[in-house]
Image 1 (cartoon, protein in one colour):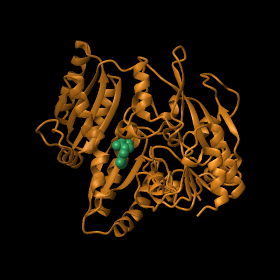
Image 2: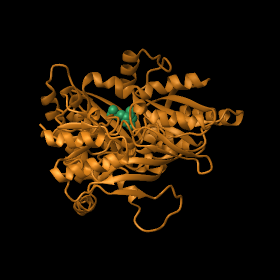
Image 3: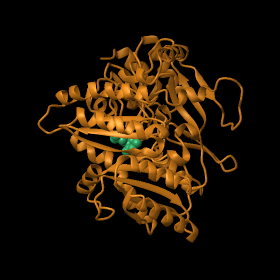
Image 4: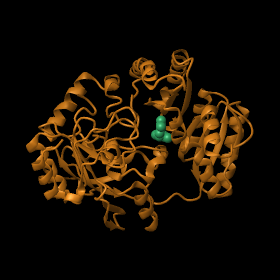
Length: 463
Ligand code: 2HG
Ligand code: ZN
């Protein structure tokens, strides 16, 4: 419980209507998509300007209260969970597009702008914001930046990091920093912008961003291929990417397809059942492009890698085919899945796949395991489904040691324990499989420099 005096000071900064103290607000603002931790903040505040954010941070320092920055709360690693009496600072009201420059092709906007609204704004200007994933309808751009969100177009367009030209942040000491100022070229020492991208709210609160836009894709086609086995997916990737610029190369297993079609009512891509499916997106409607795609498809069939395929004949069919991949995560919530979000370099994927597949098959022989993800980026989503008759606690207790074994394997393959979902609370115990002791120590020193009293998102990333 906050003292009356503190509530009054917060009221004076953001307005009494914008200081939420009800337990229903705590339930709503105190969690992300993870369901492991009980939300327990001491207040939720909704500032409307960077100055108000700054004031809240200064007050939090004065009272030694922790802050959890909050965006759309679509994260999967507990980065936005407030479970220990923190003040949640929600960015919802910083939701304005502030400026658009057609020559720079940049847009400056508040951190609380919903990702889909940024995408729509870009489209209205005849441009494109290419970072895309299933939760764009509720995630906010500030959260995307704080977690360096990836998604389905990374093979072509990179991660959120690649589109951030400038940031305005409030650090843990309550100072405002303007980072990179939208410049393309700026070799003036350490680029703090990139430290804040992916920092998960531990260094500062991202209040404003300048985002690069680009030309929209022309005539995107979607091809779904039924693939014979796990390693063959990579043969297919190599064959296509050698000759065609791919916007996406995703995969999912038969189990994922069965579940997404049953739960969502989507049609199967074709009748043939295959252990895996690859989804490719590429641009162009000319005969030359189509002929090339057809030739490559035939090659992959001749090699015995691919058994069937379907190519979209219209934009709406392309969108329907995408749903088979994009709706998997949402579908699987029904089984309270335990999630792994792991990556290795694509070149190491064949050997890694063999080993991780063996490990998972032996450790999880009695559980259903669903594989899918952005295999073109070397990123696998491994979802273990909870059997109905097992309690959540027992289920997690079974999964945790296996994650350590996967962590060891990732260390051997120089991979990552969190490819795109961030570390938050969920992955911090595994961080040492991907980052050296010296790196972890330096991370802590960096945090101290930006957040001397350790009030920003404590316990996230590391303790
Ligand atoms: C996706 O690629 C998301 O669909 C979510 O990153 C993955 O829920 C997951 O495991
Ligand atoms: Zn993903």
